[in-house]
Image 1 (tube, rainbow, N blue to C red):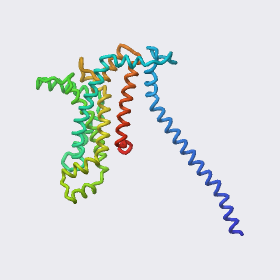
Image 2: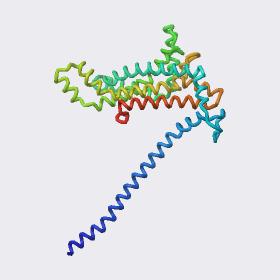
Image 3: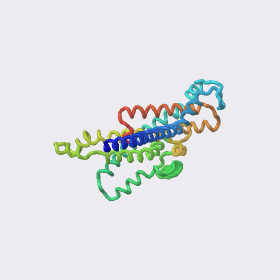
Image 4: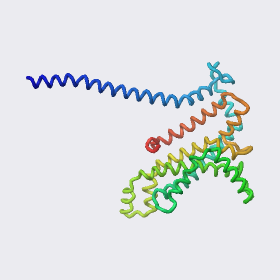
Length: 290
């Protein structure tokens, strides 16, 4: 009887302690979710306000709005500088992504899979543009283009190939970083098994390694496109009359007018980039590599 009484007493004492521990864990989870919700709200507040302002009826932004309209979207699509800038931005971003991802992926493969003198220096050099301010890189490219034009008697400033070459500097670092991370996480046993079964180096790379690299390549393509499409600092010093990207066209518009048209253009950019990320995540889960 004494033993049973002691055990019952311990259960009575432990039951409130267990309930208190569960209550603390539950409160901790809800507190963590609350903090995460506040962080996400803080991040998305600028996006929400941009979309909201694009629907304001009045030309001068003021709160509360007098009404809502879609005429600012019509105004954005009607303006030639925005249409031409959007087309040029797409063209430059696609070409820079294609060339940058191809060359950056090859460089990342060589850095991760091979050992050669200067490997670390090459890796640092390829990642260098990530730490260089855009305005500094743009100024350096501008001066470099002037020197090349004087030597080769070719135009690089305010040209499509000059813009693409400059934007490749933005795409290569992201590609090297993401593809290298993807390669480091690959299981070499799968490649060794394919070679043991008679596959040559090229066949193994094409049918085994390259499909396993797909998440890194897709992520690199997505981030490279976004970095090129939205770049302003570097692009500002490389464009010229009649060849202006969308961010530069938006900046030029703000010099003379302040109305919700800019918010409408920014909303279109947000929707485009969001759609690209959703489509990409449909085929490759970005949460696994980003």
